[in-house]
Image 1 (tube, rainbow over the protein chains, first blue to last red):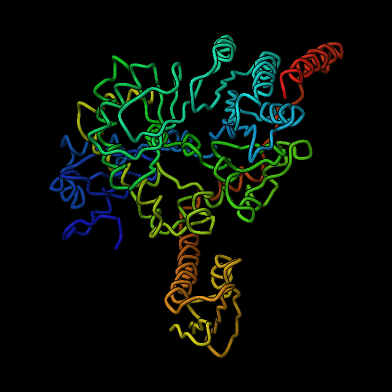
Image 2 (spheres, one colour):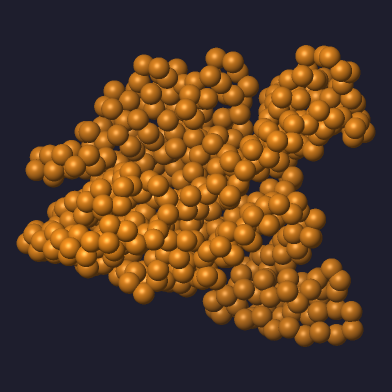
Amino acid sequence: MSRLTEIDKPPKPALKSVGPHQFRRIGKFVLACDDSGRFAFLSQAEYLGYLKGLKRGTALRDKLAIAGLMSDSFDFDEAARFAAEKSLLSWPGPSTHLLKLGAAGRAMSLATAKRAVDFAFSAPARDVGLELIPERLESEWGLVWFIVQYARRQGEWRKKAVSLTVRVEAALPARMKEFLDGHRVDLRAVVEIAGPPSVAVPGARRVLARVNAPAEAASGWIDALSEAGVESILLEPSGSAKDFLAFYAAALDRMLQLQGRRDMREERGLGFLSGRRWLLPGHDVLSELCYAPDGSIYSGELAASLDEEARDLLKLGELGSRRFDDLAKGPAVRAVLAASLSENQPMCSQCVYRPFCAVAPSENLRSQGTLWGRHPSSERCALHMALLDILFSRLARTESAEALRQWLS
Amino acid sequence: MIEIEDGVASISLPKPPYTVESLRMGALLLSGRAEAFLDEKRGAFRVELKPAVPMTELELRALAGEFLNECLSCLYRQELIKSAPEVPQALLAQVLEKGFPALPPDPLEQLEPQVRVDRETETEELLKAARKLLP
């Protein structure tokens, strides 16, 4: 059974006025969206009227013309500008570089760490984001100490804005915290949301949360984390998808209630709403590259953690021998970027959320054994669609739409 | 369509719609789990899937189903690519054609070799200090 929705007895569209679009029923609304992500919410009666053809001068027609959904009053310049902003033409290259400082007890060498920083700084993006993922922070502290200072100096030398993050699972010793604070390094806490709310890593502004809790726990967790200063959270399922979605909806509602007092954004939702696929967390090559302790470059963090055969498929080269400008010549990068084009994907090509969503090829490879994935049976596609339903149902409500739009400002 | 005999799944597939390319994608999916043998007779393909480890009939049927899903998915994707809007594909082609241009070397380092030397010295000192912090 398809996850796409239908309209009962739709009339034959008046092609003179109805612009190319996809639609989806969300609750009592119909969401209509064009190819580049301009959208409008309509009631079912309004949507049927739109398909039949709207008379000039009506408020609904004006609203849909602004959204680019009327073909007989189409603003081509505006459409081209909007599409260019969201297309690969505006892609600045991967902006997050993940350094796995240790894996299976083997730590990255200092020489490899230096090469990884040099590689990240050779990317053309104006902003460089480095996220350090220690396996055992105490024994890898020298690496963190070096990378932080070297990256800061590189930022000054190359006049780039640098954001540094260290992923942590527990509170840091005072000397480490002091050093990281002094060098403007953010902490990203890995949190298991399962029991009662708690803040395991004081001072973390970002959280990667693995959720296995009911919806009733969401408000308490969001309150506790926002009071502790968390500004950005990435929610990932760790239990059942149904429970996760209920938790996500409740957590999102609480974040939107708190907006303006204690702002917190959910990173995947923010990525979806931006309409820029390179802002989707964890999307291979488009948003991130990952460097393994042995100096291998992978298309992303998930790719680096797959089994050997799958990992090899998404290995882009070795630090030291691979230059940044050689990346696009490799078959892995070409395959990943081609597989990220959802216009060519079964189901995505008919999905109203296509301009906002993409499943990372490494996720397809992990769950379905193929970079392209089979989206009609993909759990990740189903999850994304449900998350987008939650986000767009909030966008349809005046009171939460403004708070969500502020996420993008 | 799927026959199971002696621990091997045999599948007959008409051509069209099935193509060698779609069967290759299906076989790739089973990499490491099964061997795929292909025979071609008038108007049809015959595929035999031999699992790497013995499987029950149910498991083998599921494996063959997975193979067929991937074949169909590939066929449908090819159809979509032919009819998809051309602009996103053209943009991707342009991005790949251009490659990922790296940042050019720092002009200051090129004009003033001493800047480069100073930076290398500073980096070397950082590395030396960091080595002391490692176990």
